[in-house]
Image 1 (cartoon, rainbow, N blue to C red):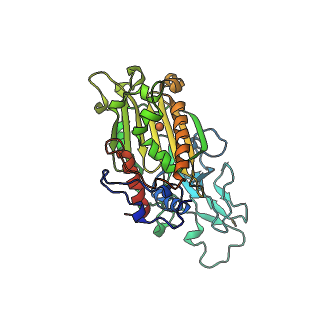
Image 2: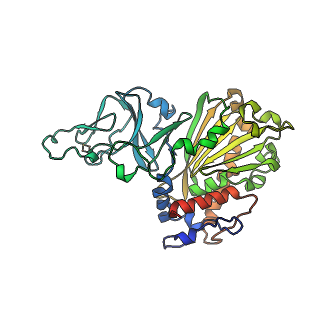
Image 3: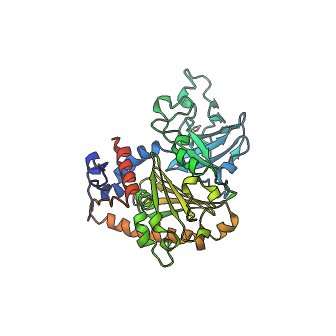
Length: 396
Ligand code: FES
Ligand SMILES: [Fe+2]
């Protein structure tokens, strides 16, 4: 068994100097108390992709296009609902919890100028404002601010709906969304947007999958940021290491995000240069195989000539040893999209990583090898990730 005392900031400190730095301790990947701290910190100060609602195969934004429509969604174990305005066209997100006595407000997709709580009939409008409730007509000081619903900040990026659970407590009931400790989404995505300025928009979302996989969410994020394993886990022949020019692998580290990119072994498997800014062009005619973007703490946006593969590594409250893996794919070029598993090895790389991380998660629980070190040339992005987790959780 690993430790029982809560992890301290000192035990999790990751030195700024990669040559001296140790990784986060093994306990940070298995410990329930640390996992809860992450939910209260990293996941309340970051933009999170909202998962789909129920069995509806349509992307979330399409489910709430009509005025007055609403759907329930769950984000990191917290119940929310999305609501399109009735008098305006604004999309809002609210806690799916009644301010009277906590019953869920939206049990399935519905539509209308107001919604009525199923437990005792409290009525809210599409902006979250309390409208009426039988029995509540003669109360002094009613409704209070907190009898209305708190609107959470949301943002839409390339048809994906993001929400932020970090509502400023001082303004929690003001109905005006504000965020504490979080950069606005456009600034978080600024470098990504610059790299995509010439990229065509996706034509359709082709698949959406959610599954629980072994290993803490940080293992999956770390693995995504780790080019070091490609030559081993995805080795030649027939692996990703064959499809790319590994020696050209480039890692660019920004404040909120990291870009990894590499040239394709075969130019035909690379991007049309017209889709990318000049800095990716190569005089020798090599073409970029992929732009692998990571947004801290847990979002991967993988742009290929066929389209976009989105991975979210969601923590599962109460289960630090597992990750809810959300995988959406969007086609930009339909013909290449159909070929993505053969030429870009999409499914194979995913299966190899999932298998490797299941092994690692067993090693993490062994109690051996409590902290590792970083290879300075190959593990800069991993170091950036570990340092940001430590700082985000402990605030220093
Ligand atoms: S819990 Fe909603 S009206 Fe009572
Ligand atoms: Fe991998």
